[in-house]
Image 1 (spheres, rainbow, N blue to C red):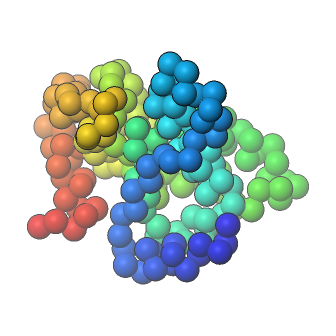
Image 2 (image 1 turned 30 degrees about the vertical axis):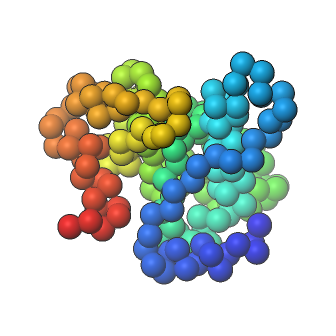
Length: 177
């Protein structure tokens, strides 16, 4: 909704990193069974929210906006092709206000490495770039990953890339000396 544009504008002016955590889960009543809200609902909420943000043209209006998505970005990084395909199919009729394919907005997005599996973390790193991934544990929540740093260390990449994920990217984005 454009009613939040003053907020986005100020965040861009301040050059701050915004952290997006899922909240009001669609279908929360159904997801209570087996505690699927944390397994399926949180990644879905992040993906859906980001879809609205991208397709609405938010990152066109605020090209300097920086947004960090927790839980590895939900399903978004793993379905970027699907988002791009929908954009391509509807862009001609301008049913989507966004000016570019969703994958072009990866430059605005950052992700924590809370994906649990080393193979998934490596895929995320390859999709979005090492400079867009940071350690995340989801502390203090029960589904946290207390070995997130160890997984970053186990990646098959240079030590400089590992250091970027472990602390360098966060220091740069949060402007910590």
